[in-house]
Length: 64
Image 1 (tube, rainbow, N blue to C red):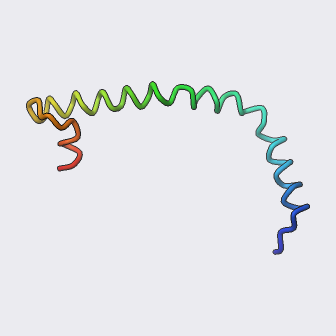
Image 2: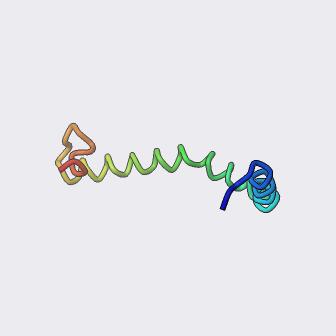
């Protein structure tokens, strides 16, 4: 099937119409991402120190 610019524009417009109302929810989740990553990295470091008796490398258990 050949996709023309007009057909692509129509399909893109339909997708935007269908999902635009969900954009605020997506942006809220993106805004929370730094907090989630910070928590994950903190947990990795704490578990690594517990397993490796305060190894200076917090990723020691992940690297092997």
